[in-house]
Length: 88
Image 1: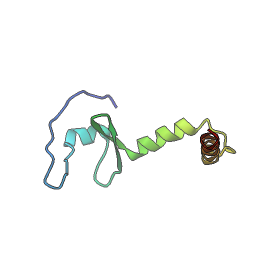
Image 2: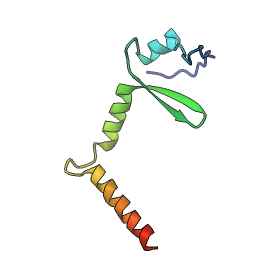
Image 3: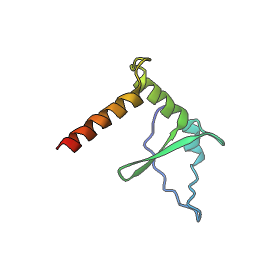
Image 4: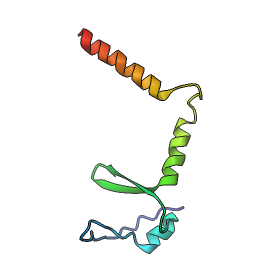
């Protein structure tokens, strides 16, 4: 999908709702019931298709060996850091 840098001003509704204009929904290939992920990047609100986020994360972690526990490594790192803090 080619990204056009067309900007539209949107209005926040009384319940905090925003309507994504039809041309933008069509360009992103999203429709009623599709899941989006929202996150903040500095002063911007970014909406992405949940499937696109999942694919990106899967690609990022595809190089991790199946036998490696990322959670286990994180816990071990935190324990080492805690031990250093307590020793100092």
